[in-house]
Length: 164
Image 1 (spheres, rainbow, N blue to C red):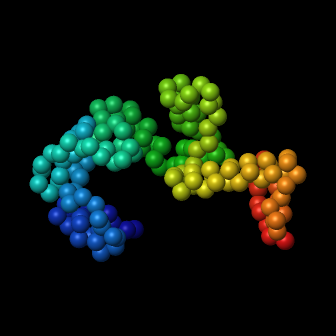
Image 2 (cartoon, rainbow, N blue to C red):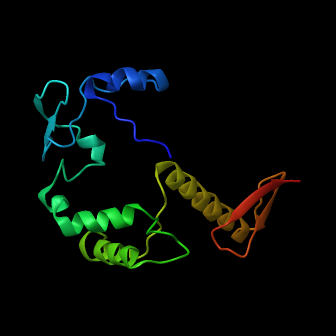
Image 3 (cartoon, one colour):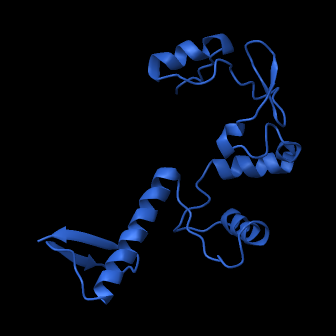
């Protein structure tokens, strides 16, 4: 069994520099003391108004009171130990998330969703959809790109271009 490694705030930057191109901010974010829009530096104890907010990935701020409620923390813990958004095996968590999204944030004219693990997969899937759309448009018009043959599978969103 591997023991948990604890790195003190003063060693964070040196540790990261040994393994990463560490070009982040000079502070070490204190996740216990930061709250709302106030980012607290674990090195100095100074608080800073966070104008970056993790560039949109932390829209609730630090330690939002609702996120600290015991029932919410228990749900987050259960959800974090498995992939509750598995596309093959559905969970109540996944259905609750989708229904909440539909009810609170998604525009009614866009009722269908496609979730992926992150930005790179989102871009990849967007490109595949664009290639599929263009290939189908060309097929409908009786055009094929020269030197290419379009192969489609039984899945409507899958298209492969193969050179002859």
